Length: 596
Image 1 (cartoon, rainbow, N blue to C red):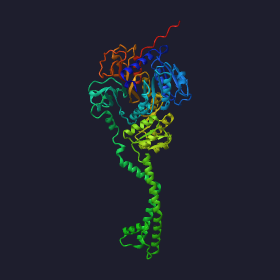
Image 2 (cartoon, one colour; image 1 turned 120 degrees about the vertical axis):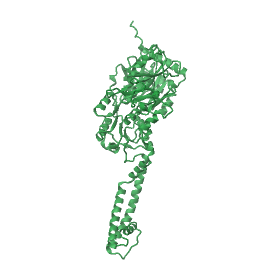
Image 3 (tube, one colour; image 1 turned 45 degrees about the horizontal axis):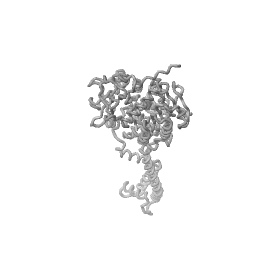
Image 4 (cartoon, rainbow, N blue to C red; image 1 turned 180 degrees about the vertical axis):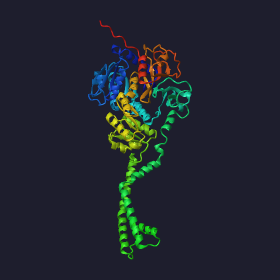
């Protein structure tokens, strides 16, 4: 279980050992080992190295990294160990013995779990941070280790893509120390429930993130705020109602209409059309030649009976009428089996397509989701939970989220999303938004540009690795939102390695705000300083604190209160703000010994 869930004495014991390691690493710097094979291993190492030169970092990576991982040699002061298997010998070669913490961020849950067990054999007194997609498995893994944090990058990143696709704040809420808080528009919550302002216009057409709180009664209705939940409908329900006006589960007539359209295949259409043409022509001939009493309608009545072979042969008719009757009877006998076969085929196809969620027609106001990897699967579940229509695309029929799509009845197209034809199959021209979250930057960008070409007002959300590239693409190509998953989640992993508990990640615009509890370590600049020193840092808002010997959180602390070692400060911060606070809460490195 996580540190916050452990009994107080055990937790304080773990913290004491970790603090000692952080303060007294070899050459005065604690040692961190990070194992991974994709972009997160680079971004996490960069995040830690940019926090200051107070730690040593060793990366353990396979000989062949994924194509989107930059050159690890560009990371200053980071040691790189190449190994294709994470076992005890690899960890010994990486210097894991005596390390302060180990981050296992391989993209495979089983690989990370096996590596954690091997690492325990090398260094039992070790903080572990594991990346896991399966949250159920992660809950069980926490119980295997004394000091372990399990994080899911997909779970943290998915709400950001959902919010970007809908143009509304994602229904984010969390509970900490007996208090439930949620993200909402200022107009949706009472003023007394507002904890802090997350975003508001800065007067120049841009959005200020974590600005100073406006005076009571001021502030715009569309300002994004963090608020305490009341007994009234929670912020999640309010946001969900705004995001979704109607649910797919409440549209049975739409599903029925799609089934009928699927059943009306080409064969059935040809058969019906041929039958109608022959029936009308033969009926017209009979009416004209026989002069049947009762006029045209009686002639049609006789015609229809003849079409199904139920009329008797009449020898007293003239030759033209007999010929018409013969042709009509033969046509009816021939067409009835064809119609029956076409109807059966159409109904079978309709049932199969309904079962697989693959009705091909009638999609409007839906969201096209490209990529069913770990992030795409979580995003798919979020959108489905909100009752939104989704069409999923992935080039791999066995992608991680393919089974989930079929279980949810979501249409799943196997194809290349960078192709115009694939996007047309997903009815991109009538979609509400396109969310592209595959792991291939080229495919993602091409799909986004094709969608923009198909419809200029299409809302496009794009996943790219490099944050600077994502920002430039957003501006140059008029993409609504472009995000880097590794950039969104790296601060949470870095904080967890340093045992700064990240409570929740809040997606805001192109940024990720972190709600975290930061422990003040002995000898740090914050040890003995007033709480207002932490609150004065740029991009940091203090919302609560707890003392070293208590789990109770004061949600309205006096800013003049003096902090002591072991106190925890609960904050909302941007990446740079959290990094600055970590520096303030960590003791400076011990001076290097003088040469003899």
